Length: 303
Image 1 (cartoon, helix red, strand yellow):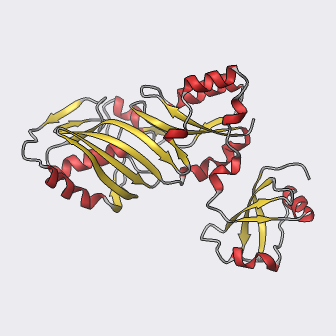
Image 2 (image 1 turned 90 degrees about the vertical axis):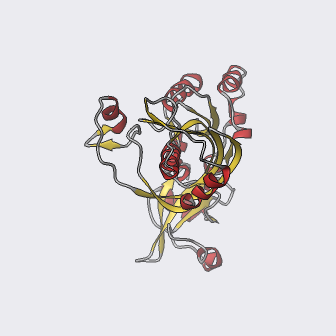
Image 3 (image 1 turned 135 degrees about the vertical axis):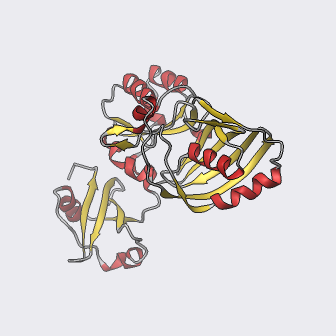
């Protein structure tokens, strides 16, 4: 079974538990999620099955949209409502205008330090394991991208934000950093992931819906093709000879008729390749040394 499911993860369930449930329902051993959601969070969780697990890295790179409910005046050790409260502070001096002004420094490319309660590893151990043992280690700040950050509801101490951001952005860290900037503290109360690239919440499948589809033998109608997540890459068609070469790991040259498309290829030098019949063959990568295209990830095995 090869394809991608757009799952609406329920709050209170780990991403790993969702993967385990989908494995159980589909009887597919190879299932992977494309971007962890905390148990506190709900929303879009793309799951790749079978050969589709090989495109997870491309989904990681997709832009994401979140709706976050942030509580002002409360700081916790995990930066969210499930953590231990470290301090509280009066927020009567924080107006909507002051809060809105504080958002300015968090748009664009910004430095962000990952929270201790995260799956990042320190000397082979996940940070959250160290945090639960009361150990805090220094984490390196890294640059993340926030494209949009807008207030959608103002009901202090609760503020709801819509956030469009790049990969690696921790919304819990954003909530904490906003609280530090406002000098009143803040923590993440709830989080919904509305979109991951082409996957949207309104088209996501709940687990009960997935269970029903499996019971009726209708899972295939919900399974998205592997190349669904690759539409941002330019597509080329190869002939039978080129197809055979790519399947067997050999490089190919593309004809002059593809020059216009090739000129549009960006920094990653990757193209989607299709057979003459329109079947998705795989991803091919440009080799500047000999001006050929090498098979990067090939999915079609029948020559």
